[in-house]
Image (cartoon, rainbow, N blue to C red; front, top):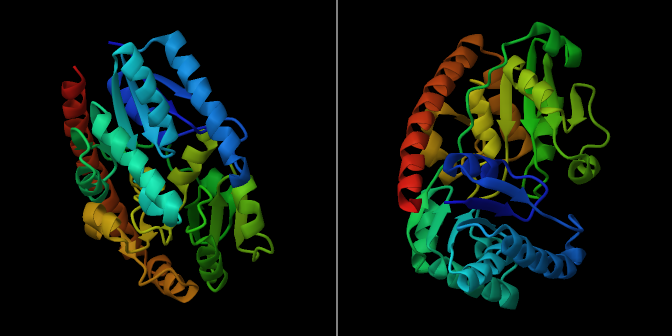
Length: 332
């Protein structure tokens, strides 16, 4: 059984992980990536590109990522013509994240159509799974993100390369407009003895992190080896966002590095991580600063949350093994 895992993006950690889980071939395709005004042309080109790619490759199973819904839609067309199976991974339910109106209704119709036509549908948490079931999706299965234990040791030289303060924090961003980078930077600027290191794509973050305070540094996209070493060597991680349904992949990365995490209090985050994270009351600068001060000023508390992170990662690994076993069983 040949599985091809497909996404319309230059990279995708979740699809990388799912592809390894099912032993599939991983393909990312994109063109004119970025500006929204390119979307109509981009989707037309990618739709045709996908049909050609799948026809040439001829996989038995296509594992396609939504959103955008047009990726699984093109994959469904191939699967219908070639009598193959389609599995859709819903990184999110796109219709709940659109502007609504005619566009939202159209996307909702397409999502319902492909989800109910696919052989199986996977998603990242139970809230999305409930939405998919409302859409009559076939074989809905939750497969949480999972990041293997960070193999890098804590390294004082790595810390000193970027900061000389007693506490070093990291905030990794993808560039979504609801990520509250400004609140994280503002909170760090009010605290002495703390350096905040921000990582992420310059194309999406550069305009949001100018005029940085002296204790905040924007590092851009680091090479993976250096990024792993950095996460192993800092003291605290921040994940402040107003996205209501998002389980940020970086939280799983932080757990893999046994990092204490200061997070926004979204329901989906609390449902999975519980008291292994410290939660800000809201995503404002002052609320984030209050909790960051509490964490950075208490070595015993930092140690306690490191211990909770290690335990949580062990639990996530066990959960991941169960979910992947079920995913493979359904495919085979």
